[in-house]
Length: 350
Image 1 (spheres, helix red, strand yellow):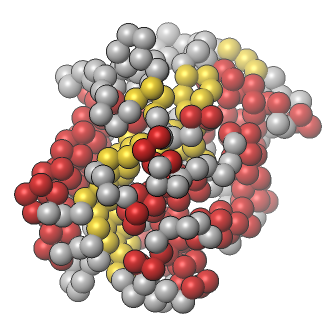
Image 2 (cartoon, rainbow, N blue to C red):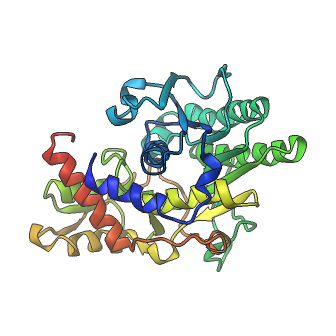
């Protein structure tokens, strides 16, 4: 296993989260081959290794070939090929469900809005029905900051009960509107059936396991640095985002699932607030040996497939009351991600 990833997992399981609730349980993770999904699965396997937790994992994926070998070859892992937008027939008990299956690339959202909204809405419905059927101890839907939409004038931070505007007739809204509908389903199952359903609203998340070819700006920038290319900005870089390192985000989601009482929590490191231009400058600055330059090349159709929101920082005050705090600054997180990528490149995995 890549040492950066292994260190992340050790840091996660060392936190004061109620891990004992998972002992002897069976956990289902959808999207188990994705960046978030693999971290959830590997956290469980690390708990088995370090704490003899006796946890079994059910990995739901569309393409089993995309499951990393260290997961696929583990005796505690069962892999099921399943489209989450179709009804599920799962045998045996399921104690916890983490629904992490969702397109994350703006290119997919642009080219396949129907598939994008289906994975979130139908996927949530069928996994929630399964959680109800199995009388699951807990269910968590991985949501997004995009559900908040465009902030009101003068609004900088989003609390969990403050919302902006999303245009439901914009096909790009397939992602935020799908996430919003899924959250309403969680609330409905919670109210009608008493299901312990929760949603985790992620800010921009990056780190080991992310694709450097998915079209997001942070992916493009990391690819540039990795291959010693100048960083090219396709906009003026003024848009502001908050970036959270994946190990910090995953630790926060486990804390929500196992220790949270409320239905919705934001996960975002406010200290990771940065403009796109500042992020590019940061990556140039922390890699001085590469002698990279920042270049502007703004096409007429810039922004195609990207969220039409200009601002909106997630407030993580509620989650911090549960004891969560990010371990990695934005500089540390991107430095770790680049080191991870360099190791993968050296091993011929990129």
